[in-house]
Length: 55
View 1 (tube, one colour):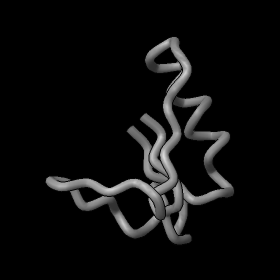
View 2: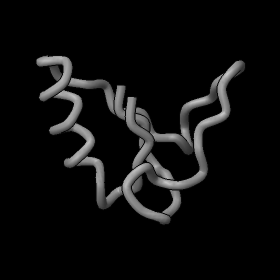
View 3: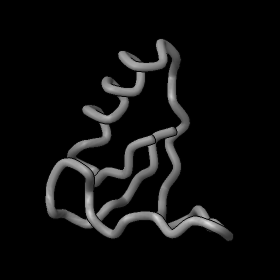
View 4: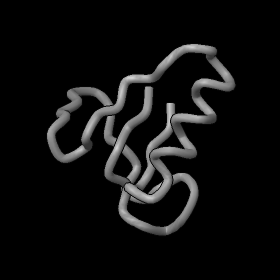
């Protein structure tokens, strides 16, 4: 699972495919709601605001 900004979505997809050998689902954090999990505010790769969840 990767929480990333718009600039790092492609990198997160590549990492996911390398690790799991299948295509990930990509969720827009502005549209997705979670009941028991609060997504990180910042991108895993930089200090920009996290926009996407790659799972």
